Length: 374
Image 1 (cartoon, helix red, strand yellow):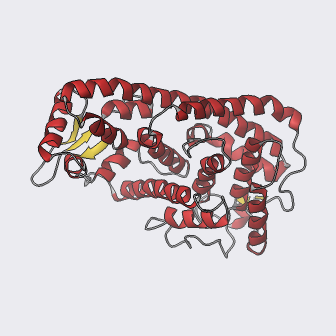
Image 2 (image 1 turned 135 degrees about the vertical axis):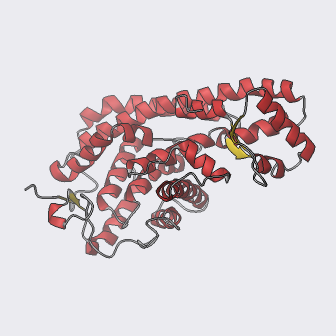
Image 3 (image 1 turned 30 degrees about the vertical axis):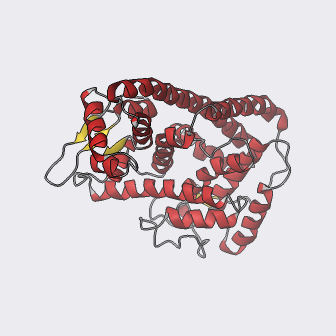
């Protein structure tokens, strides 16, 4: 029987990185990230236009941990239509995804007055577990009991990995926090080590994987690598899930920090290119729809309506009407009708009784998902 891999005591930060293997990847990874950031800077109101990507990141990061909810299901549920067709298990998955997004937003708000630190992480963890399956596992508090990673219900001797012991966890988290702000030769290599160490420490009883991946855009944003915290790395990790876990385990098993860092830099490079492509496609869609919606509606509120459906690609008609601020109600109703008649919106759920219809901006959803979903 294989013995569990145990945490690498006294080996963080590592002193044995093989920079000769990393240097060929450092330049391309940083360049790809810079190109992506340049694309972001050219997008007006990127937080609005790219909000579906934020939801997709929450979906994929949660999927790595076993949830099955799709982005369409999350947005349909959030729109508040008739979601009785969702099972209790699927609703639980959806709420975990929504909590991920809320936790990310809360952490970004905290970074306006705090550096990336343990307080930010603990508060984000509290939001992440609020009212969902892990809510009884000490939200916002480091674990005070041992934990291990393996098959559900397995004993520690049958575990795949055993994180740091409880008595050494607080000091290790202090070391981790100090390292975030140390001077190092390259910020992306530092980020690779920060992410790996957090996952190895496994400081909370639940939510460690999602929180560790959340640290990637938070770190990039705080250090100025990107101008807004909108970098989405979970697609690469989800599609390379086995290698992701094996590379992390190899750190404690074989002291292979360099192999992990190579994998992480490749992830940044590939994901930056894909993020840039996706952001560019969304911007092109926005520009194309801008002239189309203006022509269709001939309304001074056309761009406001367009911004709304980009920020909320699945929405309830009553929300559009009631939350349109300066929209006259008759104008809001007319705009929805015209956008539906011209095929920009599709009915996802028809109106029923007192329940408002739910619409989907199908082109944006398909662009974000990278496939025909609607």
